[in-house]
Length: 83
View (cartoon, rainbow, N blue to C red):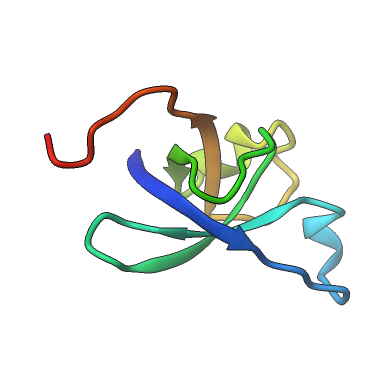
């Protein structure tokens, strides 16, 4: 798992069938690296979230048939990025 911040949504009208109608979010690590994740929890820009990656990401989104390797597992209510 990793902690990341949601920077925005990603809209794709053409997708492979394995992504269904999953919401996609652009995430940034505290060091600035960008990634895209499936969002089954409804995170908003600015939210800090924790993620599941690899094969665990498919199970975290609630449907192991979804083709993802990064899924938002939850929205963090309180966390200080500086420690």
